[in-house]
Image (cartoon, rainbow, N blue to C red; front, side, top):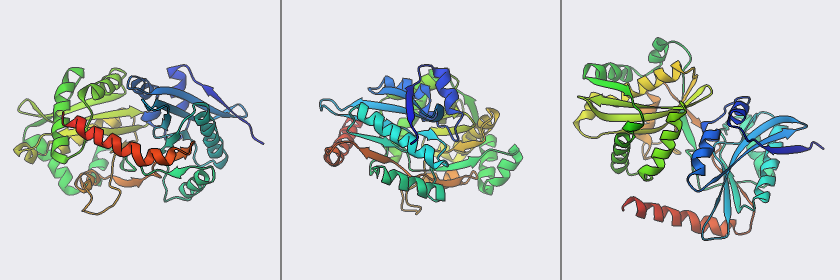
Length: 351
């Protein structure tokens, strides 16, 4: 019988360097993400799993108490990180996570790794999850699907992969006077104002500024993110924050003004400059962060999805969130707590 051990990593450099040893490390599994979440009510546990002394996976386990209830939940955002192509390593890491969930007395543990369900590997991983007691979760925290853009090749080759209208709009934005510049922490309030305007226009909920400011400032100060602002006549009309880790970039936050300025196509030039900066950082993949669950025009994300595909992106589904119930109360929690939190969030967003 193969015996695994779990150790807690205590140093940032050691943790992030370890992540980079595995395929597809994710920025939400970095030490920095654990630091940010540690300031918002979560506790971060950077766990490394070893099999016969050899590291086979890492999991940034976040735990949180559900005050005033005497319960705690756990989450491994976009993880764990391991070679999902190795069946033995998958079982080893999943069992180690189950042990950690028990040790922390969790109600349940949630994971949502970047594993493609369309592949034989993805089918096997989902079977392994079921065999070990995990269940598909109806409550997703991250997007289930995304759009990936291959950054390999020259700028001319990347432009050639785009739809003709997208290339035209990039050039049009420049001719119309749109300029893209790199912002800093002093620009965060203006970016958030655009983000809030976008949320109101498109009908999605966002958190208060203090939360985003904490996240954005933390990653900007560590050179793991960049803020880009598209300006017209000196005023920001669109912006995005791009995160970096390893050979991948993530477009997690985007915002734009409404009104006539949209005809100047600021978002097209903004995305092109983000793509160029990701390539300059050595990234080979640009994750455009979010795609519809239903690939039909009736989906609320359809317009954003088409916009992303126009840059040459490819639809990429993941297996989505999976929960490991650790208590008979899991079913009660899933029926009561998520709807309650959604109602509370809507109420807070109107204050």
